[in-house]
Length: 394
Ligand code: LMR
Image (cartoon, rainbow, N blue to C red; front, side):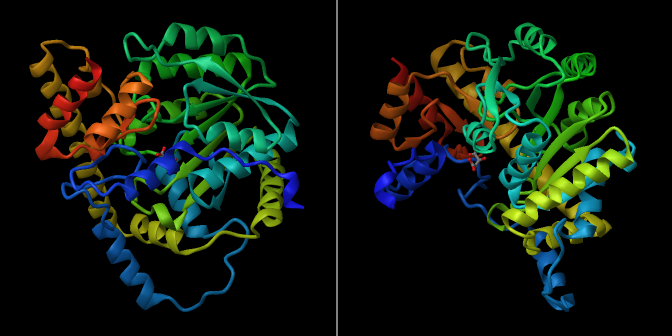
C-alpha cells in the first residue's frame, strides 16, 4: 500500500528544532521554535504550575473519563480569562482541545461542516501550520495583505480594504495578539476598524489566541478579540495554554464558539462534540486541570500572573537590547522595529542566504523566513549576536 505514497513535506519550524539539537557547537544560539527560554536558555516548569501539580497529585481521586468537552472547571475558567464580559455567555460554548493546533483543527472541521469548502483568509504571512490545518479540513486558503516589508509594520490600509471586500461566506483568521511570525500587531484603533468591517460584511472572525499575555499584558492583548466578539453575531476562538502557562507538551487548548443565540450555540456545540468524538473521543486532563487549579486559586493565579509578567518584561528587554546594539554598531535605525514589535517573534526581513550564513558560520538558528524568537536571545551575548547579524548582511 505505501508504495502509493510520496514523501510529505516536513515542517520548517520542527525541522529546525532537530537541526539545532544536532549542532555540537557550544556557542550555538536558538532563535527558532516558539518556546520561551530563561537567562540560562532553559524552559523551566513555571512555579505556579509546579504548585498546582502538587495539589493535583495529592487531591486526585480518579482517572475516569472527562467527557467530550473536557474539564468543565477549565472551560469555565478559560472563558472568564479570555472573554471577560465581552459577550453574553448564553451564546458561547467551549470544548477543551489538544493545544492551540487541536483547537484550530476541530474548529476548522466545524467550519467545513457549516460551509463545506469555504475560504479561510489568512494574513500574509501567517504561522505555517495554518494552511495545512485549513486545507486538511477541506477548506480553501487565501491571503489578505498584512506585513509591510518596508516599515516592518502592518499594511493596515491594504488589510482593511481586503477585509471590506469579503462577504458573509468568508472566514477571516486573525492572530488575537503577538502576530506569528511577524511580531507586528494592530493598534486598538485598528482593531476597532477591523471589528466594524467584520460587523458590516458578515465575514466570520476566527481568532487564533496562542500568546495571550506575551504582548502588552492579558487585558491589552485581549482587547482586539473582545472588541470583535462584542461587535459580531458569530465568531470562533482557538485558545492555547502552551506558551502562557508553559505547558507545551501537555497539549492544552480550547475551542470556543460564539453563536447568534443559545439555540444555535447548542446546535453548533453538538457538531463540535461530534467532531471530537469521531477524532480522539475526548481530551486528556492533566494540562487542563493545572490551568483550572491556577485560575481558580487566588494565590496561584497571582503567582502565575507575576511569572507571566516577568516573561513578557524579559522579552521586551531583549528586544530593546538587540535593537540598541544594532543601532550603535550600524549607526542606523533599520532594526529599531525589533523593539516596537510585540510577542515572541520578529520577522527580520533578511534574505534566506543571510539566514543560512548565520546558521553555518555563527550557529545562529532562525526560521528560513528570518523569524526570530526573541526569548532565545542570550542577554549576555547581545553584542555578539548584533555583530554576527551585521556581518552576515554585508
Ligand atoms: C512556533 O510557531 O514556533 C510555535 O507555535 C511552535 C509550533 O508548533 O510551530
